[in-house]
Image (cartoon, rainbow, N blue to C red):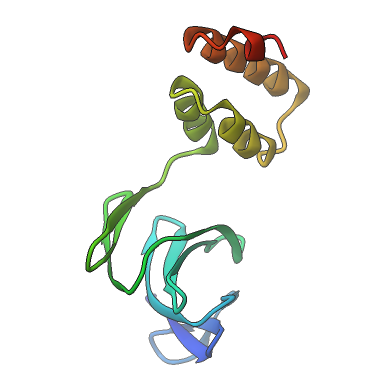
Length: 151
């Protein structure tokens, strides 16, 4: 049946079934009070009272990404595989993409250091590490950053 996330305290949310009984999904903890939230696939996107955007995995019940976004956020609108977060003077579109795709996009844009930080979070195998370093080297060469490409 349908479930909903209800704030149990200012920093904790619990899932309830439509009959009001607790669902067997655990709790969600927030570092600040959430003022707005929505879901995107298996993730909960929250805007916290301090303007931070928090992405929480609904499968693992842990926060997977957090970034300070905007002053005075006023809305969050879900779409297909994306969420729009906005305030009076800013709009951000958050899209779901697997880590491999994010790393590839960062490399092709020349953001090798950021790609490596994200890649390391995925606990890659030794083969994937070698492939990453090969691709990172070619990304740097294509951007004419020769000295860095041999590191």
